[in-house]
Image 1 (cartoon, rainbow, N blue to C red):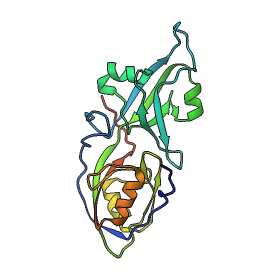
Image 2: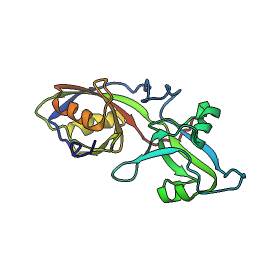
Image 3: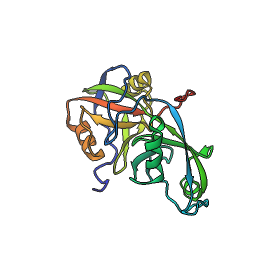
Image 4: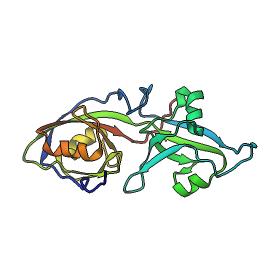
Length: 217
């Protein structure tokens, strides 16, 4: 499905309340993560069948980058890949769908550098934290626009002085964070945008990719 129906939306919505932050129950298609909102490192080796360093091997991650090329999110992990093997042997540091890739070998993520890297590859990921915002349609502007990939729906921009900005700030929600579900329903980005447009009341579960200074041990 194309993204023609995924243009920016500016709904006439206003917020009722912001509920407390909670641990996300499940990512689509993966096990429940042990915790959220932390950074963790993954070290994998790109070696050929003879044990020699190579840049030809794919790690096995499918990544989605937002419109600003700031957020790089794991969209899929290929079965039988280097990353799949890491996950099986390091369950407490497993990479999951929805994690954000921050750095490759100590440098901010760059697709070209990532693909050309050979030998030992150090990857720094961020596990998102989930929160829920509740809305009721009123006369005031919603104050937010979205960017949709084929798989994910991101918050593109938040209008200065809007009610969304006021309430989102309290919860720690910002630009680049991702809408996980609408009223308990996870669907394609276009479907979630349509629900945001047509429903009288909304409960949005949002994955926050805010950076902090603590890591998961």
